[in-house]
Image (cartoon, rainbow, N blue to C red; front, side):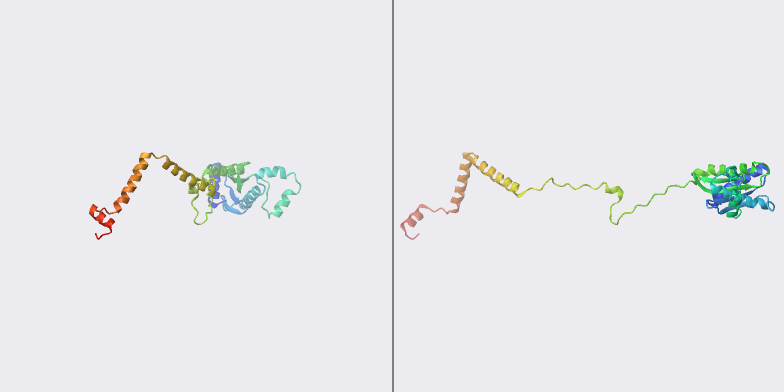
Length: 234
């Protein structure tokens, strides 16, 4: 229960009290029964209505019910009213005019009205304040706040964690036996290719090799060759 909410409720109650020409005392307490706002419209009169309005607001919070409902079932219990009044130091009363204040389904406080100049006036003025709060409830409802998420240092943002490519692993590592078999198959294929080569291509290759060898041996004329064979000087 904030002071701002209490003031808005009190202003609505005062407006209705002026319309009814019934000056009253207005007391608003929080959920723990602590006084948040009090105003006495008939000042300097209405000394008794001040304490009665505070007792009504406290009783409404204590039982989370309108004080008129508490009076209906509490009056059937002998000594109930006097015992509660003594234990709460006079802040308990069984009389109409006290209502719990709820916001978002939770009780946040209580309101007590005393001093109405006609039967039922206290309840009517209190309900006017509660109606004003209901009109403001959507604007006063707490908005959910995003919860912070712990993220280790150096870790990628959560939005990018699912975009990382997955590593591709081979189904099984190649064994040494399979590797040797593959090499042997390549060698056999090379031998087979040489054997299947046409004879013309092999002859051309052999002639090319013999030509290269002959080019390395210097050619000499017939006279030099005959002298060389006869063992004479060249």
